[in-house]
Image (cartoon, rainbow, N blue to C red; front, side):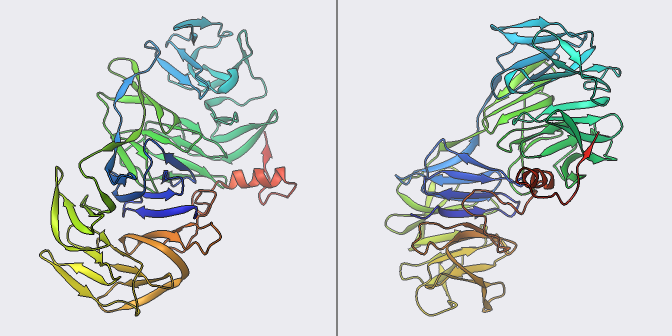
Length: 484
């Protein structure tokens, strides 16, 4: 059986695939792929970041929705940090440090540090900063928990912020605008002359984000690069699975290649913490309570007995049932559409294409179906249409054809595909043809096969991670690392 069944995307950078285990996979623009496993699916359709649908084996329709917020298990604390193993530490704003233990906050010796910040990793890896500014973070001398008290780390630079990656790597943003990480007891410089970052958040594999109370930044190749979000950035949290939560107006979560999902909290929030795609925290600054969010889940909506669905970039949703009857969703109920098709493809409410039972192409005019000439003789295997009227088809030899202008079909490359989806001419994806080997790959319109390891390696792959991998394998780095 092929590794992947299908792929689908929106024109906002939202990108999903469905694997042979019937798991929906969310592709993020930071080389991470997240399975959304709350419901096994046989089909998936993406219109945009807020319009994502799936079909169960019984042909029932599911929509991806946000779960409700709930209070975190800790009682209110001025600032909290937590890790994947459940460790939680906090500070009270008066320089005191506490550990959540036995259902309550228990004070721990701070070693004389004025602690207005704490960074927590798995296994008791806890750091703070002897603060000299009165704000969260630093600047100040870093301190580390030694099991009985916090002690100064004498070989570390004056720190503005510390973040512990899920893999245990300690990252430090220094007061003199350098970004460093601790490697086998030695501080390595990852970037110099950095932006004036207030804080950083470290994921695995050298994936590090930063913020300056205005912009969100990402570290790559020894340099910090700004990232466009939907608003300003006041803090950020990143998890081992690539989950990125950004505080601002609005609060957003990375949901694709430059696609951001807006989140609505009851009150203004700050201090974002990401553990994984189904465990995130945010501080409600009005109540002082940390809120826990479980991410998204598949929720059943109206509709059953369907074999395929398609969503447009404007949220339009159509389906074909087992009898090849056609249906459109009005937001509350499914409405019958004249005709018979084996598949319907939706770019938007204006641009809808169909593939009839004999493999011929059609365009929906609003009142009926108009035949469209095929690029080759014989039955077409699949069809997709974008919101800009761009039309795509796969012929009997698994070759992809595109028609950007009416009557102007051209073969799109030599990659053999078994499925195709399009949001517009610039956002085209699918899965490659399984030639009998049992392996295939997710494919994007740029011709990049993103393969069986579930990663889009060409996008935001950390040069630092690559350098470290080369070093571990005994190959010289392209860019020498600098010791403190």
